[in-house]
Image (cartoon, rainbow, N blue to C red; front, side, top):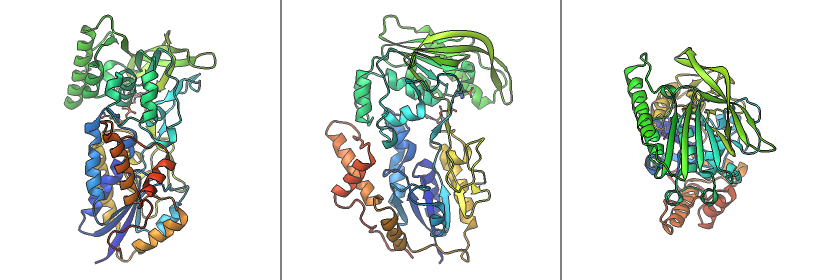
Length: 456
Ligand code: NAP
């Protein structure tokens, strides 16, 4: 039977769900998964909030998929930098990109680049110990933070700023972030939504969680907590649940709390001001007008000013182009038909880089399955033949000597978990590539050749 070898680029949820479907196929498919970091799991490691261990436990499923004998991991290999697209296409029957959307969207207002104004993508990566952002050192020495955006990322960021330390220190939050948040003097967080409460993108459980933080005073500034009539039944239920939580929080305002959270709807920053660093946010008051789809925010011209020592923009992520791979700059995605890259050469796409940065982790399963099905249907025994498993290891040993294989990742994983065990935490994360590579090597097997069953 013909055996096919597929490269999946990106070891996050979409990559794993695609791998699972390919490995379960009746065709004999070998999967090599690449990641630019030495560690797999993408946003489950570097995006999901550390105080959400239940969501993070999806990594157990990924570990099961990774245990398949026809799966291999090659971390610390960046496509477009250490390895190029052509080199992959020369060695694999197909290449599937599942690289996510790691850039941030900008507000496009004056002062956005002042010190103290950060993108949520950076802040989240910092507290989660992503090696690129371990040195971010956000200044948390002020008292007021403004978080822009009404999605779940905005709630994550606000919650992390407001949670008491005794909760954070039980998590796998990066040590540098734990120390900085212990010193933080931020006590008042304002969340700005450019549209109304009924248009907020966040989900009810996340909303309930933040307004339920102990000893937090919550204020809701919105005249109107009424759901629009023209929503689908499912969307109507979500909106009604959100509004009920907000209504209840408004009625239960606690006096004398040290920490406060304010939701301000129909408000968007028009400028961020300060002398060398953020000091205040000028906010435009919006009204809603019919738009396509739903309703859109329109600036009324009225201005308000909010004190701010820290501004975090949580207005969505954006995909980045991969060298040589077709890319749509407007949507920040790779154009495709049912997961097959348009104008691509045996190339496929899944996850946020395929459909944009939306949905929960599970949304990636259906997305990846569609792509895997399209890929499987395209495989032809008469097509170009992949090179043998061992030849790929030899090639990587020469071109990326610091790559991390499954056994290297196992060493890192074991090391982090055992450090965590010593202090009753799920793990203590290594936060530099250098330390990860050292941990993989120190335990003797880090970058050793794969010892699994030989390929074709
Ligand atoms: P999101 O859900 O798309 O929310 C983005 C928010 O930013 C929206 O409120 C949007 O408002 C606002 N926005 C966009 N441009 C803006 C601008 N120029 N000025 C002011 N506001 C602006 O994105 P996200 O929060 O980054 O989350 C990404 C995905 O990850 C979502 O599907 C989310 O549910 C998921 N996620 C899930 C969890 C969880 O399950 N716990 C945690 C984190 C993230 P408009 O609606 O007006 O455009």
